[in-house]
Image (tube, rainbow, N blue to C red):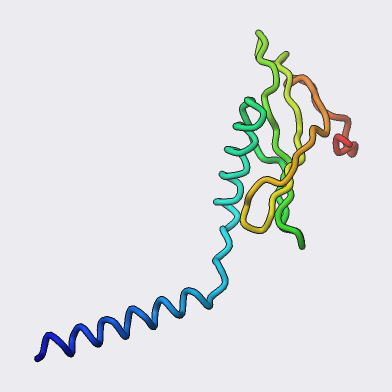
Length: 117
């Protein structure tokens, strides 16, 4: 008889937790998870290697990142071509769009205050 009451209690507890999870909003990923996933998605779509994230912002629609990508490897490395890509993601961190903002040689710096746009 003691076993029957335990099963009933366990079933009630599991239903309660199942009901709770079905009514809760799905948890959104944190910034680091979004950043990592954005780099992976961009690499898979473009076939190019993301090197760094130079801008990262949460917006009303999700996230916007600027990712520096190696487009063409050259010797010496300072002559390699990099590009800045703007990447838009939804609140869950799924890529919804991207575009190349600029292309430049690794060894070249931008004039102060231009911001690359």
